[in-house]
Amino acid sequence: MSNLGSAPIPDTDATPAPSVDPKQGRRAGTAAFVGTTIEWFDFYIYGTASALVLGKLFFPEVSPAMGTLAAFATFAVGFIARPLGGVIFGHFGDKFGRKNTVITTLLLMGMATVGVGLLPTYEQIGFMAPILLVLLRFIQGVAMGGEWGGAVLIATEFAPPGKKIIYGAFAQQGSPVGNLLATVSFLGLTYMSAENFGAWGWRIPFLASAILILVGLYIRLKITESPEMIAATEKAPQKRTPIVELLHDHWKVVALAIGAVVAGVAITYVKTTFALSWATTELDFGRTEFLQVITVALIAQVIIQPFGAILASKVDAKKAILIMLLPELVLLPAMFLLIQTGNFWLAMFGMVLATAPHAMYYAALAGVLAQLFPTTIRYTGISVAYQVSTALFAGTAPFLSQALLSATGSIWVVVCLGLGYVLISIVCMSLLLRGKSWINREGETGHLAKTGTTPATPTDSVTTASTANH
Image (cartoon, rainbow, N blue to C red; front, side):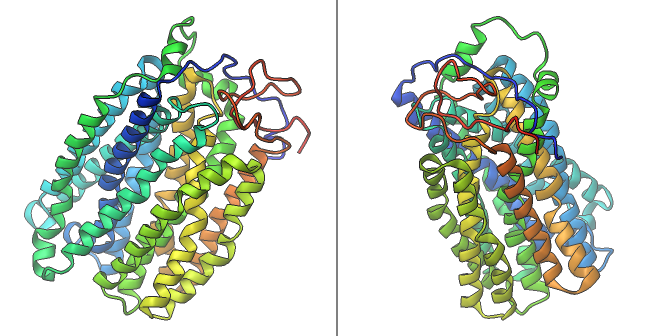
């Protein structure tokens, strides 16, 4: 790791950005936001259901604690599949364009989600129920693995000069809004009897996603291919496949980016999916009560998150990252301490405070990653970095948290796990940005400057690792 940022990083696109129609840019930002909101809604309802009901319905032969652990394991399957989706759809997105790829991922996610809503339980079909559940979750993961990168690029490649991080935040905003919709949908269902909820009520959000998918498809069919992708495909064709070129020429950036993503994706599952299970099984919170806590925190995230993109666009990148993430080292332990009191209002206050740091960081993350790779491998590059990180850290976060709690009986071991996630991102993002600053913040298109040289075209980008030995 000490030499990870010591060698020069290959230059990316040094061509001026094509002109962007402002109307198309706004439409692309809207399409990215709406599409990711729907996809994240589909993805998050599984997480909420796994914390509340899936263990009982699909793994009834084990204890409640082990059933929850098994449900969280199937939850993790979706994350394990996401790198595969990133490679598959990244390849097609880099070779043939962003638009058709994100339409395909939306359809795939919709079919898998509705499939979960229609799936018979263990009581009805025996061991085939958990097998089919895992399969559908895997398909969800493949779809999400391809969705995120395409949505980010649909937004950032239509961005006006100097606005890539701001436009990238449109795609990022879909995550808290989708999570909020998922939480609210289950919050409403908790008012029905436990018997009806377990029998059929939990299926409603999964089946209702079919309507949302149709809305998302209508919006995405209205957008055009991104101007940067059109310009890139008009040049000479690629000599290698995107994943080969990425790992051969840009592996250092990918490695650092994987670590940089961790705090933006893993912490939320410790704070919501795991905390929901912990508070409703180990503490005295009811399902409805703690879902209200999470709902208020998500509303706060929707409001606060965009300010991270604004901050990262106006302040030196490395400084902005520290401003956003360092408070998490104090606020995360405070959140669990306040939840442990069992007081509804203190738990809500703690979760709202602890949500702000990682939410602001997440908003800026997409725009930073989107400027690290050349156009012709950009979809693959950001997808692999983001999805490998989610597979290794985010998808396993509820499982590891529950396993640590079960093994030690102490919530503070889980807190240490969360703090570790934050420190990984601080270190990796700092190395990624070491010795560099934003180039011409008012300016033009994004690419990495050749080390020690002046870029051929000034850019609205983040440059990467220093040539000095680390």
